[in-house]
Length: 103
Image 1: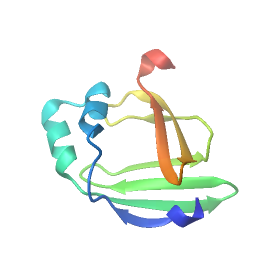
Image 2: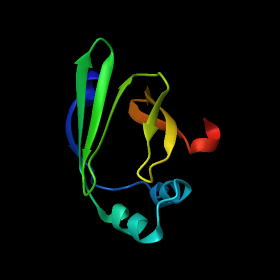
Image 3: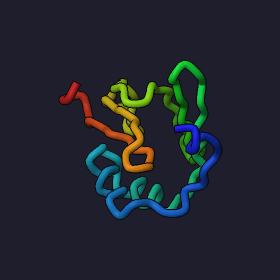
């Protein structure tokens, strides 16, 4: 994970990003706007296996986690979700189980 710490500028969103936001209950106009943004993401090593990701955008988001461990976080629409961050095939991957019904 060390090679990912630092500040990163999003240059493009995956084609599935809008679908992901739709599943999260994000309204259509917000999804369209989010797809056009290129926020800065800062990944920090807090020590003892803890990391933090902060996304600087219209609505800043921040979460702290242990790599490979599931944790609860609040989605942009306010719902509590289970998340896990891991490194898969050399990429940081964020796994999400959406909404209250999955808790």
